[in-house]
Length: 441
Image 1 (cartoon, rainbow, N blue to C red):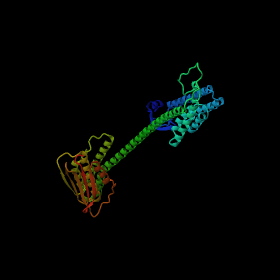
Image 2 (cartoon, helix red, strand yellow; image 1 turned 135 degrees about the horizontal axis):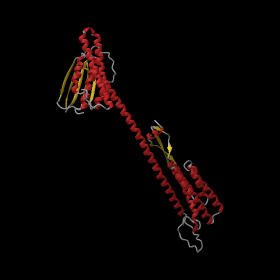
Image 3 (cartoon, rainbow, N blue to C red; image 1 turned 30 degrees about the vertical axis):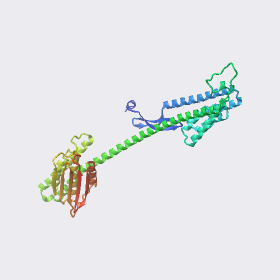
């Protein structure tokens, strides 16, 4: 495939895989999958641009507030050295806000130093508190909030004792410019209430942002778990399908191959009985192998999606139990078959599983006790359900023909999937397999 065609066929799947908390903000990382190949996590360019633009705006706003506060303090008569030191500290705090996500506590300490000791503003301290809220919980957050509250209260208290025409707290109040400059002071509870309001607003916005981030994390975690659950469900379905295929293969081939093995062994032992009997046995081997191949082709057709015969195709139903018994008799087994089924249509799954029960039971009887008589009984009605019983007597010598050991286990699963139950075991000198199935399954 040429690079051009590869680019045309590549499908870019954007999958959120993590939400990295960075002090009040979140950087969404994604994985890019091109033609099934996953690349490493990448941050979106838009998120970087928004983050840098917000940082630039915050720093510029803090520096502007510091500059304006320094001007108001200087015009109102505050000591120049105090205004200069406070302004330098606040300029440093404003620049330090660039690293508020990486080192929030250090930035907070720098931000509260100026307003606590000198006549400058506490804007940088409020933004630093916002950053601390993203990483702090409990008493640490309470302590940071109290410190910022005192810093803002101190800053506004300086403002409360300035001339009214140079005060932030009295902006908007008309002052008579022809008269003397107003010198009245504000009560201390006013700057404290304003500071409390500012701190609560910052905390409210920060908690809203943190809650939104937590919700985003929960949504992405849910999506991740849902994707994992879907993958596990697909794997379970594949496992169940493999088990079903293996069971069908066993049920299809085990009976035929066991019969072929026994017929071939009998022909080898009784090769002197004459050409006619040898030819008859060879014909039975051939027909048995042909039937097994037909069933194998049917299963392969089902796997390929080309089978149209339904679940009972190939005479694998109650109607085919008689042929199954006749085939067993041709191998030398003594089988007595009794059928007492009320008129009516049996469910396709029940009919199919009933055939499987008789087939597996006859195969086991032929394999482990070939000289013993076998009795097969099938009966029931739509009111009582369908009952299958296969009983064979245990002979003194048991055949040593090996088996897979999965026949009765797989048969129990099949009967259970149809809504019935199966029991098997030795009883009254014989081996009995009993199954009950619902009529309409």
